[in-house]
Amino acid sequence: MTKKKKTVGKTDADVILIGAGIMSATLGVLLKQLEPNLSIEIYERLDIAAAESSDAWNNAGTGHSAFCELNYTPEKKDGTVEIKKAVQIAEHFEVSKQFWSYLVNKGLVSDPCNFIRNIPHMSFVWGKKNVDYLKKRYDALTQCDLFSDMQYTEDAELVKNWAPLIMDGRKKNEKVAATKMDLGTDVNFGTLTRDMFNNLKEQSNVSMYFNHEIRDLKKNKDGNWIVKVKDLKSGDKRKRVAKFVFIGAGGGSLPLLEKSDIPEGKGFGGFPVSGQWLKCTNEEIIKKHHAKVYGKAAVGAPPMSVPHLDTRMINGKQALLFGPYAGFSTKFLKNGSFLDLPKSIKFNNIRPMISAGLHNLDLTKYLIEQVRQSPEDRLEALKEYLPTAELKDWELEYAGQRVQVIKKDEKQGGILEFGTEVVSAADGSIAALLGASPGASTAVSIMLDLLNRCFAEDLATDEWQAKIKEMIPTYGKSLAQDAELCKATRNTTSKVLKIENAVVA
Image (cartoon, rainbow, N blue to C red; front, top):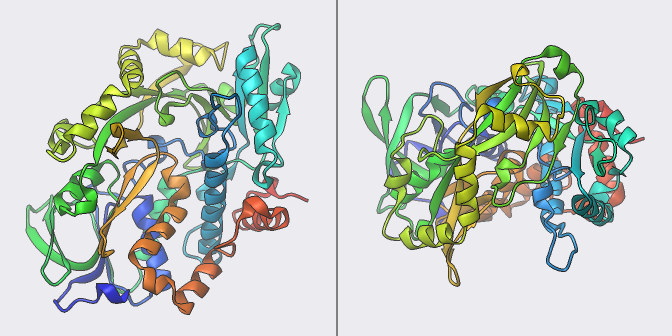
């Protein structure tokens, strides 16, 4: 542990991880690899790991690499396309693949085919304005080595060859365009998370507790954290003391951050957005589509609501989803309480939350429209991507909750952030992760940032540096600026993760 976290009081654990999702799993495995003697306790309020945002049905599973998600490449007022965020996300996903490859090579997770598959990523648009945008996006992205293999076409026949269903029944004179990246993947983050925890809990000094809810957090005078835990089955309550606490409870992180009372957590609020999918029940239709096809989001839509016709591999079986359709709920978790949002409103965050609401009236209007949709309305949205769709072949599936971050802003009072935010105490003794997409796909980079904030002295040691470079060979290097390193890295991870179609000759 870092020198500044050396404390004099008695502790029950070096580290307490709150929430059994992909973030806690990633941090737990990283820390245990870096410091095998660390004692770790993990607490989860549900009876299984990865049952909320990390579950396969509760997230897009895209393996967000910015290949197809148009919301990561906005068109600026001058008509140019901004690719900075897309490049960052693509690099971060390559870091995740390197870490997962290390886990596979070390036998720390099972067969990679259980959690990652090679599925092409496509962007698809129609109408002159959108076609012009996609072409500019393609031209901008392919200047970067991370996207150099991207294909672009305005040829309807080639698009039909790539993804037949999206062209069947479409008007022949409709102007369309598409991009395709064969390197795309589908990731079952639920399976990956449970794999990591299954290995982690078998190691020495690691304890995992399900059906346990964190009721309060308080910093002791000696610098340690007192964590109040309730066993939801027996009703027993107890206190645990730890040197470092990570709040990785998805939508449940904000209330716990507020309970910690750290100055850095003041002024943060949360805006919950729920989601639904249309799930295809017709096996013949499912077999005809093998791609993740993303389009343009409606005005005001949150990033998690970018429409896509999505091939998934869930529990070894191919599935086809369309959506997500956004909705509004005051719950912060799928298994949460309708009181989550009102209880999160405090004196220190009420102004940012009101300001963010006033500045995002388009989002409010969009969510109201989504909530009021009928099955026929949802079918019409699907038909924009699958013109021959019939309601009888699809059923509604409820997805997870996402809590978008609201934070203080000097100029606007409060802003709604789309993405993830690590909030940590000045002394590095506690950290929380807030926000949503592209979270899971970039979990490794997010946790490396957390290590830099909370374990800076340890991270600077030769031992930790060497170990991190063993786990992530390109650590500290930019794949976006090194074509050969990018190609070599992708080929190595593709072979280890058994996504052979992604190997470049």
